[in-house]
Structure formats: C-alpha cells, structure tokens
Length: 105
Image 1: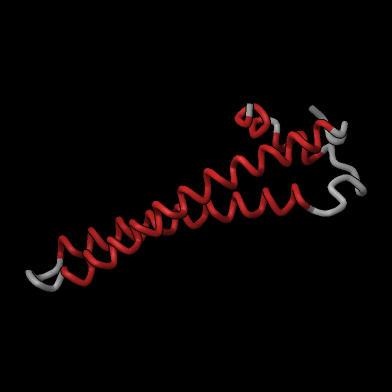
Image 2 (image 1 turned 60 degrees about the vertical axis):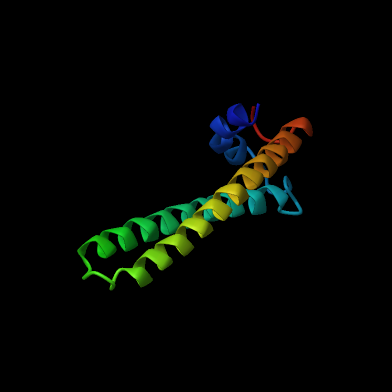
C-alpha cells in the first residue's frame, strides 16, 4: 500500500545507510514529489489571488485576470496529475528499498 509506505517515509529514509540508495533514485523521487507539491500550492494560490483581484477590478478590467486564473488552473490540473504519478514512483522506490532489506520498516 503506497499510503503505508508514505506514512513510514521518515523512518525509512532515516534508516538508510551511506551506501543505501547509491544511485540516488529514492532521493530524487522524494525531491520531485515534494517539489511538485510546492507547485500545487503556488498554482492554487495564483488562482485564488487572480479571482480575488478580478472581483475588485473594474468591469472589463478583470478579463486578463480571469484568463490568468484559467492558466493557473490548467497548470494546477497538470501539476496534480504529475503529483499522482510521482507519488506512485516514490512508493515504488520506497518499496524497492524495503524489498532489498535496506532501511527500517
């Protein structure tokens, strides 16, 4: 279960030795997953900010802000899809580390 692996993420990574994850696959998967989460927050805030500014704009002046909000929303949807893929890859990497007997369960 990927959610169980995620719940034990800190314990697993803390248990890795110097020679574990020699190629850095797990570290890269973790970094990419958390960086993708950062983009989700950024794009989400962009949508909210643009909509808030559009509500306070003069009539006709909000068109650009609404277009920008739409762009942020599209990027948010794509980022979410990427986050799901990266979560699966991170879980596979954690599973591989545990299957080799590295790290702590």
